[in-house]
Length: 299
Image (cartoon, rainbow, N blue to C red; front, side, top):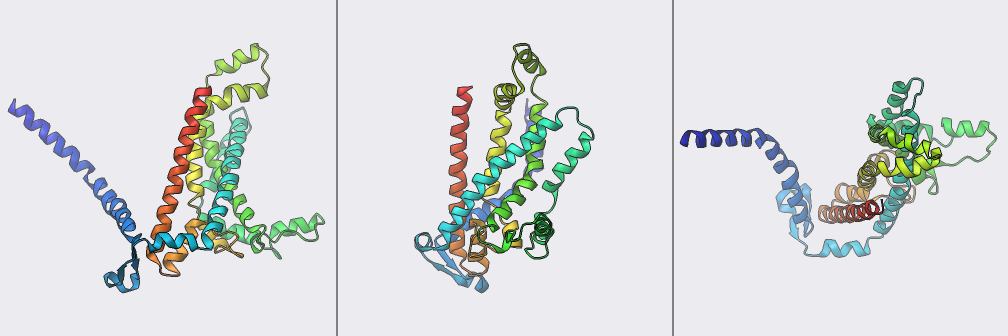
């Protein structure tokens, strides 16, 4: 009996040793910074002075949010960005997945072509698109001039077009990701359902609405959650292409956090904004869970 107990103990120790590196990594690079950021919410910290730069601020950083003139605009831009890019990325990915799920010539090459933008570095993508969006010498406006448009959009230089320009890039780069997941979901739908519906005289549109969309509900929910979270964390495109301009038309909360922390050196206020962003993402995710459960009950 003691031999069996010792063997069991050794196995448990071995198991803990295997997960120890990952546990230490999570502790050092996730848990500790998370706790430190929560402490910073109630502090003022000039990190250029090291540990001597700490000063207790109480609720000042939280109160400052109500007088931050840039914050409402950043939240509004984030909301518009999410409402536009998330559904359009999903719809585009679903339509492409439906087409590529059939017998299409060069199907493998087309899948790779659509997925390639997603795996490319966003910084590189931003630089290339910045050149394409150039109002005077860019190929996009050059093409529009050739079609007879005298005054094409200013794109990144225009407050009216800058946010839309970034949203176009996001939809373009995310479509491949949604396509791949929808392809996996489509291949898991039993063919018997479509064959039975064809016998009953269902059109392709009714098959899409009554079979494909409901059967893809788990995939749709996963994509909605992931893309929504990602949309509130947009940073690279804004940082490289517009710096939040022109006239704060592309200012989003993640870039606002960066500006407060590393341009204005208000680390405590940046931490407070970070936790505000976390609460927003958490609330949106909970709402999506509630909606998904109610939708599932309807089916």
